[in-house]
Image (cartoon, rainbow, N blue to C red; front, side, top):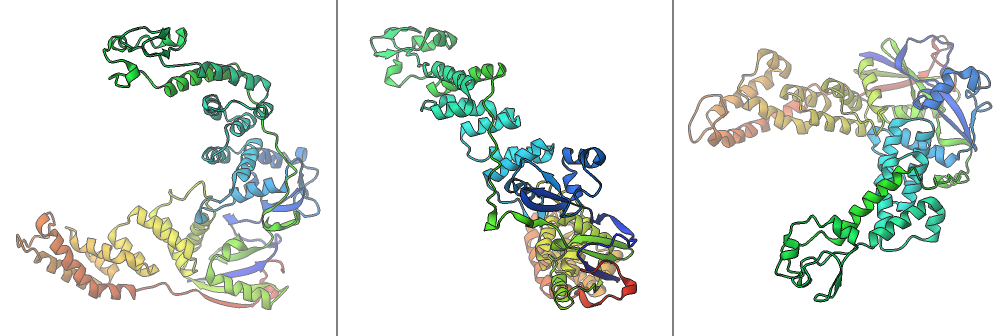
Amino acid sequence: MDDFVITWTSKPDKRKTYQRHPAHFIDDYVVLKVEDTLFRVERSLLCEFGVFQDMFENATTHLQDETEGTTDQNPIELQGISAFDIESLFHVLEARWIDGAPHVGIEQWKAVLHFATMWEHDTLRGIAIKKINSLNLLPVEKLRLASKYQVDKWLKPASVELCLRPSPLTYEEGQLLGLPYILGLSSIRERCWSIQLSCSSCKKCKRITGNCSACNRSFGSESVNRRYSSYPPSYSTKSVPLCSGTCRDPPPSIESLREAEATQLVEAFLDTGVRPLPEEKDFKKTELPGGWIPKGRHPRFYSDDSIVYEVGKLAFCTPDNILRTFRALHGAMESAVANQPGANVLFSIKTESSSLELSTTLDVLNFRWFTGAENLSFEQWKAVLRVATEWDNPKLRQASINMIEGIGPKPLDSILLARKCNVPQWLPDAYTKLCMRKDPISAKEGTLLGIETFAELNRIRESRKRSCKNCRSRSINITCKNCHADAEQVVLAGLKKLLPKGLRHAAIDPVVVTTRLMAPSRSSGTQR
């Protein structure tokens, strides 16, 4: 086992030379000021935006000095945006896969789209567009957003919707969309709503245009009727009048004709380059969730405390809010900080987890909700499940179990992992597959399973061979459909004796945590 030592520190000591983990020693933060609120976020997070990446790469050009953005007294001040908007961005951007998609409203998604477009984050922009499109926005509002953020795929469907709705365009909509755009839509609406169906099947008039005195119905305009004059001649030669509603081959509905006309005319109108007026961003909105006044450090997005700890020969630095999700550590950390205020406290932890397993676990905890975690292998999820079980993180443990079940490991791997991490629901199916398979259990598998389990599984397999009531086959081959169900019942009956033994075998020992004051000579960080 490795000795796991954690040092509680508000700011990692940069004078101390660590063999830092290349990906999970996070101590580089940037302080931003928006209105009167301070945000402290990881530099790597900001560098995902093209604008900030260019800013930090060319710091001498874009920043006043080297210390700008490193302290509360000298933050990077962002003008022209509100604390509400930047909080919405971080709320979406920092949401983790383990917690699922963030629950935010339309105003917050609009703020995310604004920053993703302005600061060049293509992935986040695509997600914001998809989320906003799934919401029930009014056509006028969608048109203005499309014009402001260059979402061209919204223009045609929203414009067609305005042209096809029964109610006319209003003065207020004209002010929002602009005079050129509203005049273009008005012209399209007039042409679409002038379309009427032709009573071309009337047996008396048999005409494509004009008025029919027999059915007293008006036809459409000549241009429209000429467009649909290519329909089969049966429309004008049927003996049954269309007026009676019994025509066997009726022409297209009036709604489909208007939609086709509106789509064609809107496409031609948009090709002229006319666009609606863009939405005007209101940067005066500063009301934030929770009722707190937007002044000073943000209560959530100001990362102040980190945990510096060593596993094996590698040092990690992790935000305390992430490490505290492990219940085996949370209580000890709270107690040590409360009992030893201002002191450097050591958390000495005996753990079976290696630094590689911990690194994989931190990768999963840092996965964004929109990137997912489907690309990890069984071995990686196995490491995550071990750490989550040993350090007591129920949410991460359940997520690992679900992902491993989706992968579908081999029966032997499922049995060994279920025993180690106490996942009893995997054992019946895995033991059954071992008993029902064609190939015998090998010596290597028997060594891993244990002699007692190996002997019991062999006994069940022998019983299964004699379980067929129809063909009485002694072959281990299970292709016999008649006896397969009976053999499976024999296996499940035999497992009742085996399963309790498997659960008591080789379980992970719980994490043992002790605390003590750190000696000055062994200092691994600054005092809190």
